[in-house]
Length: 69
Image (cartoon, rainbow, N blue to C red; front, top):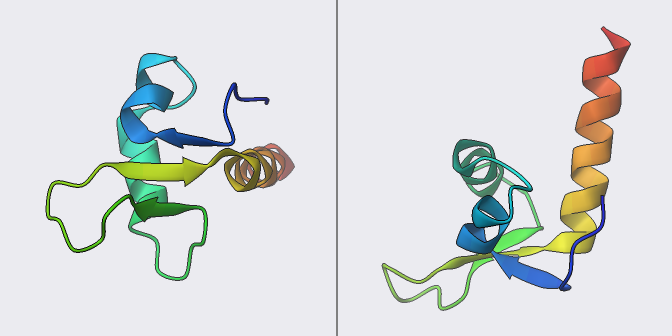
């Protein structure tokens, strides 16, 4: 999957129909992940942004794993 920008906010990805909010939040809260971060970590309501290249690789891997079963 290709995305229009190198980094995108959670809301942009949901609004664009790329992924569900639940799916993206699960990725963000996964310990050790490197594709999502808060724009300003010190601010509670800071938006979550995703590295779309890493996100695409992760989603491809997830798709392959789900198809293997």
